[in-house]
Length: 328
Length: 282
Image (tube, chains in turn purple, red):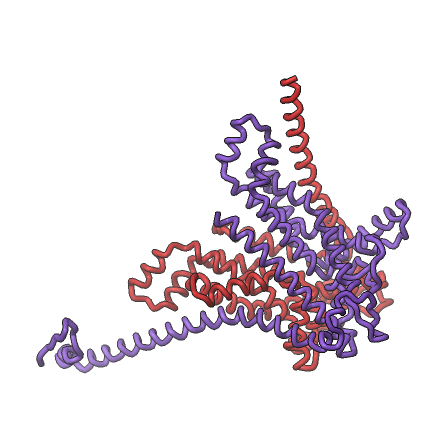
């Protein structure tokens, strides 16, 4: 049998040479080996395709969530139009739907919570990032902050209902507003505690990334510690801190259970921050299973759609800022 | 005058340092208040009887939370079975194809999914499973929780595998190993600690989730192990009983809160031990 080499390539005709010289067992062995390697190539391709499908699943999930929300809220979009979002009356019994009380309740409680939490979360970020990056005390604080994030929201709600609401009621009777206890103020307090960890942990990692030569230069010019923080650390990290606050806001807007338990659940427009109200998430939680009319249900889902879009935008902006910051 | 200026600046510096300390540690107070209050209110309610009985009707004292315990465990197990394979495989895809267009969209979707309010996921699960099947079921609750787990598992898998040196994979491929065996025998075993802690973290997160279960698992006053039926879970029980006007039910809710809290704490500490033992960066 001649071995032919064409164009520097070994062609098929040289393969039988080895096979013919072999025993039948060896032929069988070669065949088996070939079959196995073909099978492995096939498995490899199947595996690669499976990975791709799993990646696709994530994309399809998000698109599916968006589509489901849009399709299910179509009846309300059609019959109520855009003015649904700023009509002021919500009365499902009379078939009147206006989302303004809930939008206002959400905005009030979230921003109030944000304003309460910002000083604390920035203080934690500065403490852990600048004053004491290492040691047992910051470790304790770091674990405590992680724990704040880990406690389930329903437990915050229950604690708020049993402990915080009476305290707030007491406070309200002292400052001369109607002592109800439950209301936007109570839910803001609970929310403020719950969202501290998000801005704090992000702010901490941002502050530790401040280049030390910048700080050393400022110290070299005779700046005090506070001056270094105020004129070097904070300006350098301000976009990162802003991103952390945005992520906190996203959390506050979407938080459901704790708010539902302490906000009082009325569909009236809140007159002050001490009045009971409702947020978009809490009205969905309360009324979704009771919604007997198609428009009622779909009005609630439209609230969910608004919530979804707002939190997506906030989170994506936050992530973009973080990415830009860490790549610089 | 110059000296007093320096003194003033130093004083201001110390003042702000103390203010930072005070504000930073003020956050620990509510946390401790919550922990102590839950422990104080819950510890007297918990006994063997509490763990193995179902809740009694209003007016009868006693009763337990066995239905919620069993329900929570079942719902979480089913959610984990759904989410872990998809999450890990998607994470592997992201770390193997860093630049492809699908990877970009997949990463974006993961980011979006991470921020979606849990109540919205509850609505979606309602329309995907509850409405077509015509009844509330534990399975639909598991799907909702699985959707919440996914982004955490995907992200932690991707971040862990990204940190592994390419030489590991190249060495295995050079030995003639097929791609899937390189992944399962080399890459995943090396990164298992990071993946595992991501999984634990996601389970800790969904353990306390109530909102997605409101319209899916719905709750059930009786003990059931059938995942196609409505099922009670711990957070749901706490929510329903805490907002009820009955003191007996409040007592049950306090006990359940303590158990839920201990459970979540245990998962978090366990995750921490894993990350510390294997020195994972998350």
